[in-house]
Length: 159
Image (cartoon, rainbow, N blue to C red; front, top):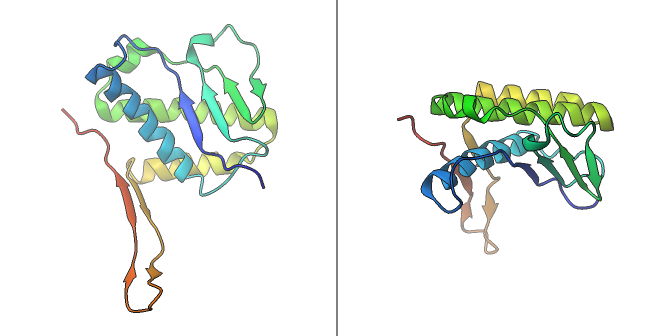
């Protein structure tokens, strides 16, 4: 089976210096959508892939995707000025659209199941970017207690 699919990394340009609060906020938004997208793939693993990198800075420079072992790298359009002008709720949708475009292009090129990505996109929109995973309940070894874990991430609040 190999390693699981675990990462979609968006390396979009930024005006902010690393380690500033604005930089971290922007990167957190990208990571939130990426993690949510992977969760909504419900365990689907593209064949022989563990990670996808999205490199907008190479858009219109690269004429193909790049392979390096289990990593795939693709360049898609990301208009940073347009992104900055959006309200926070629209920024979520913009980043999701960029990730969706990249994954659909990769699915065409590498013959992945495109329906998984379309369903993930629809699920994220339908749930209004809500990120919550409820893990199944587990019983203690002495069979006297039961507990379950719920993981929830919160998106940034509207200004």
